[in-house]
Length: 335
Image (tube, rainbow, N blue to C red; front, side, top):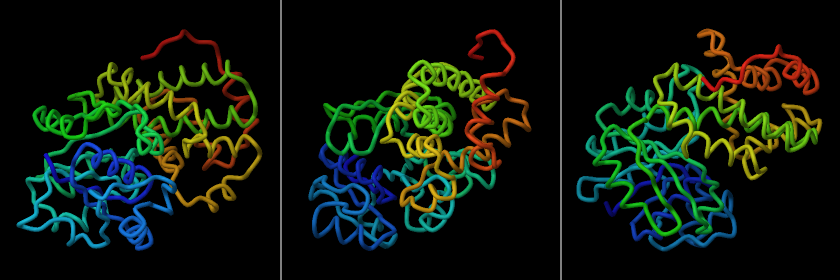
C-alpha cells in the first residue's frame, strides 16, 4: 500500500496524514475548509487545527472529492476521519468517487446520534462493498504529529487487510496491533469520550486523584457492560482501544472531552462552553444516545447517566456528584 486518502482536515486527520507521509506513503488530504487546503499546500502547515507542525511534501490537500481518486490514480486505502456525526453525509457524497475495491479505515470515534448506530454500521449502509477496518487507540493528534511514540489497534474481519494496513502505517514511533473485534474497537473509542467528560468534572471540582482513579475504573466497568451487549469481546475493552484510550482521554485536558468536563466543573454552563468551540467534543453527542440505549436495554451505566444529566438534562454538577456518591453499596463487578 503506497497511496492513501485521508478524509478530514482537522487535527487528527492532519496528524494521520503526517504519520503516513513519514512512513513513505503518498497522501491526499481532503478538507472541507478552503483555508486549510491553502494553508497546507502553500505554507505546509494546518494553521487552523494543528498549528506549528510542519507537513511533509508527500501530503497534498484537496477540496473536491473528484480530486481524490480516478480510474488511473486509484488510492490503496481511504481513512475516514470526519467527525462521527458527519460520517454518513460525508460517505454519501464520497462514494461515487471511490472504487468499491478501496478499503475504508474508520478513524472517527462516536455513535450516530440520530440512529444509535456505530460507524461501521453506518458505512455498511452507505458504502457496503468497500472492505472495512477500524483504527482506534490512545493517540492525541499533536503527539502523533510531533512523532512521539504511540500504539493503536487496527481491527478488521479481513485479517490480510489489517496486516497490510499495519505494515503500511507502522514506523518506529507509531506501532499498530491487530484485532478481529471491530465492534469492540469502535465501542471503546466512542464511549470513553463520555467518561472523559466526567473525569474533567472531577478535575474542575478539584476532587482529587483518588476520585479520578475510581471514576476511570468504574467507567471501564460500564464500557465492558455496554460492549458485551453489542457482541464485543471484553478483552478488547481491556486493550489499547478500550482501557488505553480511556486512560489517555481521562488524564489530560488535551482531550476535547475532558476539557469540556473541566469547564463544567469550574462552573461554566454547557451553552457557553459549546458556543466557543471550533472543534467537536464527540462525547457531547454520544452521551445522549448512550443514555438512551442504556435505558432501553437496561444496562447499568450510572456515570453515563450522570454525564447525560449534566449535558442534556439540566442537572447541576453538585447534584449529580451527590447522586453518584450516595448510590447503594454493591459488589465490585466489571461485567
